[in-house]
Length: 355
Image (cartoon, rainbow, N blue to C red):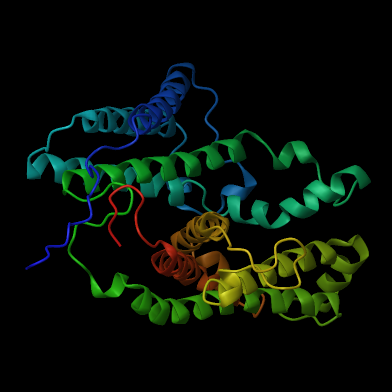
């Protein structure tokens, strides 16, 4: 008597969240409408060239008079492209390639090019800004820090991520794969947990080493060592207390480096014993993936901005600015480490049942 095993039922792999397309289209269309309004009124463009923090980055190459109409055209066209993805049928190959190509280009521009060097320092200073606000330290004008331009850059980063998620889900659906996990029944060697553990370890340690180089200079300044700067400038940092702001950034970078290594360690999957009430419990994957992805995007944006104008670093090159030249490698390496962590921990898909 032959016993035939009943195959595990696989759920529908072609459906996707009903809210994803309208939400993405609404975001793109809404900001596109604001850019169109700025085109008509000539006011409200947040990325003007006269801003002191716009010395680097690719946006400085876009003239102010062209900025609003360019953003309006790009965002509104992207909104239409997203709405074209709402159908349930499979498009022709040329149309699919055109929609994905344009969509990924816009997603990259929003998530990486627009934020440039502004978002990453804010992430680093945010704990100090929040905790020190009641005590009037650091001595900054918060209205000049959290301004319209920063809001627009953060919104662009969020919109780029939202568009990327929409594109990824649509690409998977039109390829016949599960929209949740991307599996299509054909295995790829580099995506197995064992393979991801091997290559993920290398990229994680590489991604952790770069912020440690940056932190070393800031900690040296606290100790009175003028590493990469003049003694007079170091005295000024100590007199104004800004040296401690640099130390805060160094501490943020160090914590980030440790957490990056944690993507490859057991305590990155189970909370360590010294953590009360959490010891031994499973670490939710998103608790590591969300901040790692956010920082990877912010670092990549800063790296692209530096590549767009490397002269300001090379002209005054020193050990203080040398770590900044590694940022274009830091972001992709951290993103790859996060991907390896995801591949190791994703397990069986709840949607399609594939493992």
